[in-house]
Image (cartoon, rainbow over all chains, first blue to last red; front, side, top):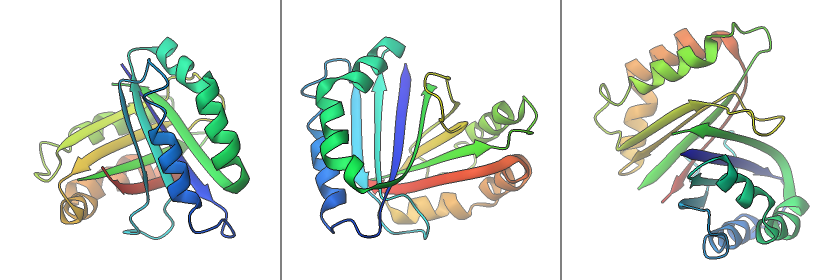
Length: 97
Length: 97
């Protein structure tokens, strides 16, 4: 199986609700994208300085399942509407579990 | 519960085995740090350009459990010996699950 992780850092001028809006929109994706096996998203708890703002991590059976998610219109719509306007940084990975 | 994620990007002059050595060292931590509930680490699969090199993600009951991991001598030793010499970039987050 494959775990996918994205860490987003939002711009300092992003509205206070931007991070929560991203998380809420991401959490609606599993019911729209059948290849998702597990899905977790959340806002940084503030334990450490310098952290990213928002995380999303998901699990898929294989690379095809991940690509279905990556390119799914519902996912692209969340990126375009909720993430792109406020994104300062992004780090991502897909690895075998 | 809390999920912790770290994404590392290694320097381009890091030896080829550096990423696998990091993953192997990280995967030995759950047997040394009692507060770890789940642990996964892996090397980027190469599906997307611009990805990080190595990921580690772990789950803890609470903030205290995460801090036990963060500050544990076995964890600090892995960072010092296997990660710091080759680290170019790092993104991290802790979020509630």
